[in-house]
Length: 367
Image 1 (cartoon, rainbow, N blue to C red):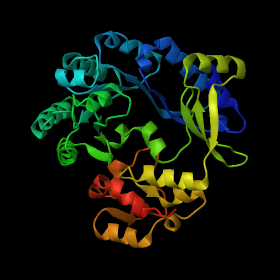
Image 2: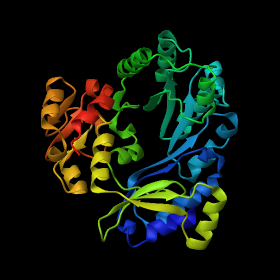
Image 3: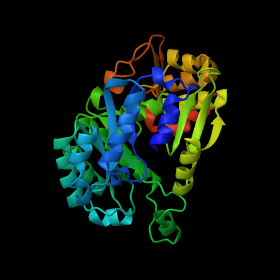
Image 4: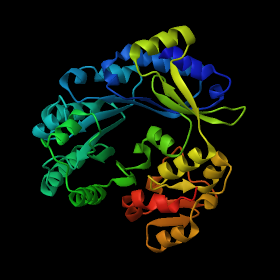
C-alpha cells in the first residue's frame, strides 16, 4: 500500500505534491487489525511528499472489542486523532443478528476509553432492525446520544444481496421493517438528536459543532479529489483536466503482486464523463444541508448549476419548503470549517427536503 501511495503522490499527472491534504481515513474492513507501526508508516509516507493541513483529520475505523481497546493508545501515538467505532446497537441480541462480535458492555467501555484518548470520537448506530419497535429505538437512541461525543452517524438497515442478513431474509428468518415505521424512526432520530444539541448536517450524520463535521466524508460529498490505495479514488489529470475513477485490485495477493511489479495495484481507470461529474456533484451535494455552492459547481464542471436543474420543479420545491436558493446559508453549523460557503449562492435542502431527497432528485436533475 505504501508503494502505491507513493505512486499517486509523486505521479506528475495528478500534481498532488502541490495540494494540501485535509484528511486521511483508514477504513473499509477492519483497519485497526493492522499494526500501529503500519499506520505510522503510511502517515510518514504522506508527510514526505505532500503538505498537510494544520487541522488535518486522521481517522481510524475500529470495532468496539476488548482486544482493540488495548491498542487504542498505540494508534493515537501513531498519529490517529479521530476514532470511528462500529457500535451499531446497544442490544446484545440485535448485535448477534447483525453479525457483530462485540457486546453492548464492551462497546460502552471502548467508547468511554476512546473519548479519553482521542480529540474526536464518533460511532454509528443502525435503526429499522428486524423486530425493532419505535419504543425500542427511542430508548436506544436516548442512550446513544447521552454517550456520544461531538459526532454520531445513524443509518437505516439495508439488506445487501449476498450478505448473511440478506440470506436470512430470503429464508424468512428475519423480516424487513415496515417502511412507514422506518420513516418514523428516522424522524425520531432527527428530532431527538436536535434536542441533544446535534445539527443534522448530512442524511445520516450529526455533529454538535462545525469542528466535529467529518472533513473526509464531506470531501466526497462536495466532489473533491481523493486517493484510495487498495480501494478506489477520484483524481483529476492536471494536464487534460479529465477526472478519472481508479479501482484497486480486489484480491489481496494479486494486489500485492501488482504493487511490487508495477508500483501500483490499480485494476482499472475509468474516465468520468461530464454528465457523471454533474450528477455526482448534485446527488452527493444535496445529501448535505450545505447543499451545492454555485461557484464550486461551475469551477468543477464548467457549467452553471441552473443549466442542469429543472427550473419549474426547483420553484415547486422552494415553494413547498424542501429546497432553499440563497447567497449564504444561515445555518452555519452545517458548513464545515475547511469548506466555507463561497460567493455566488447555491441550492441546499431544508430538513424536510433532506428526508425526501430520494424522490426529489430524479425530477430535479435535467441531464
